[in-house]
Length: 264
Image 1 (cartoon, rainbow, N blue to C red):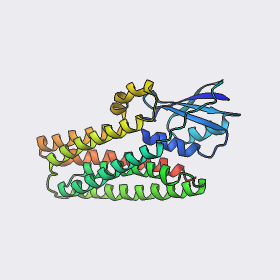
Image 2: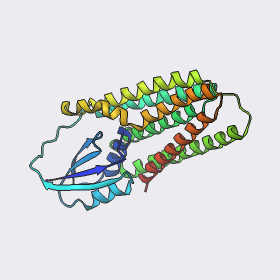
Image 3: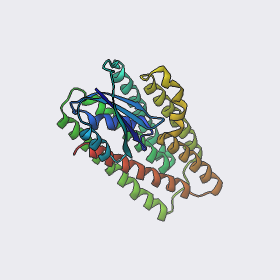
Image 4: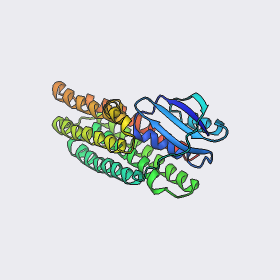
């Protein structure tokens, strides 16, 4: 048995962890994957050569780089029997906030909230792929990934068109108070998701929960929408909301392309 450590610079939330798990699924010589999200490290326990594993990680374009490979005597890996339950929990939280944010975004005329709702939907897709494809074939997983990726891109393009329409049109100001309040609740929800996922980790890693929350892209997006809401009120302009919405739509499309890589 060998132990290979990878540095993955763009792995900053559990969504990327699930993408990596799905990508490496089906490689027969992998015995166990140990993720250290706060430090952007992945330890792969495997037999035989690392070439196929390394190639798959690099092709995800998450900044993957092999740091070291060494023999190990460890062969007893503790299975996480609660993984499916935990994935269901975070999926439901993310999907619930997708519904909440897209509804309040439409009502309050906030593109920031609508874009953030799609980011929540993107995370739901990743967790859903992990769940619904459990025990399924690799072809089934790839089909689900392709459908999810294209659907996500379609929604983001529609969002871009709406941003342009509002930028050049004469729209009412978005409701800044709704933007701020809903984003604060979404921020809390993301923190809860990260905490739930960390329950499957060892106690030694529990102290890293806080750093995970503050380095997560989802949390940064929530803060961006909150700041945009403040600027909308301060400047009496919808431009901050449109700018944040555009940035988030770009992140959503980047996530969609990562999902589509799984279908190749």
